[in-house]
Amino acid sequence: MNLVIRRVDYPVELETLTPFIPKFIRMQSFRVEFPHTQNINQESFIKIYKALSKCSFLKSLGWIDVGMPERSERFEEISVASVFKLKYLERFKSYFALKKGAIKNEQKPEQAWKRIKEFKIKDLDISFSMSGEWANMGMEGDRNIDLLKHLFEKHTHLQKLKIRSIKTFANYEDGLIFLTAISAAKTLHHFEFEFLSCQVGDMEVVAFAQGLTKLKQLNYFSFKIIQHSSISEECIEKFATVLSKLENLSGFDLYFRRLNLHPQGIIQLGKRIQCLSQISCSCTKESIHIIKRMN
Image (cartoon, rainbow, N blue to C red; front, side):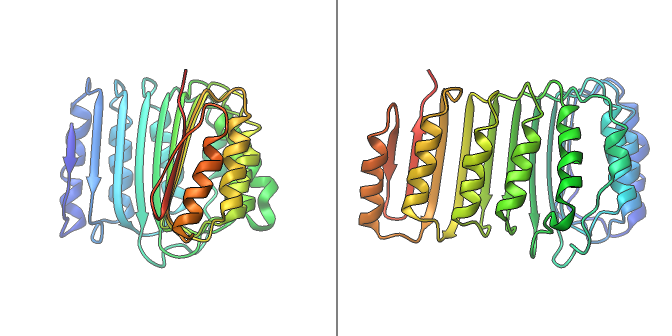
């Protein structure tokens, strides 16, 4: 079942739909999209999550909402608990874009995460967009990494993870913390990460190079940056070199677009990377694509 709810004029309009969802008791795939959430309050979303938790045969769940206000800790706890009840869920795809100025505090629904015993999700696809600066880990980095590691330790079946970050501010410390945390997902073998119109520089790419050395369970990695970036030739070359030496990676795909480098410099960079073992490389005047194909 795919629902696209273009506009809600009054919150009560959405609540008339909610009671019908649990009646599809044997539904295996559900996707709901809210391109415009201005008149939808948090309670309406909570009721939908609670209704979905009764569809116990769901194997695939997709949730898209655009222009959401900042989520409360209560919302996070209920949504997590509702997804956890779906014992057959194998694929979860989430896209959320908070409205401008929505980030005030970094929510940490710790109790909700700590109550989780196990996730059976095999394919996790998350996209997020936040107008303004991303709230970093700050002085509580140690507590955050413990919570993230706890979360990924519970993903005992996770095989494929895809993260897409749109218009966010990234930094070295948070990137390294995140990569350290996902190393706890022992079954993970396929990892994709995309930065789209984000503020990313050499240090953030270095964080991925360092973090990937800890992900011994990976056999495929994809990394894309599409933005007007200040990433240097040296950084891209070292990143490709590090990945080419990781024996566990049988394949990887690196793509950098809208580079602020001289076109001739990109061509020369491509020629140097092409000399690495089992690496192919293609260039344009503002992009470079580096591939190691899986055996």
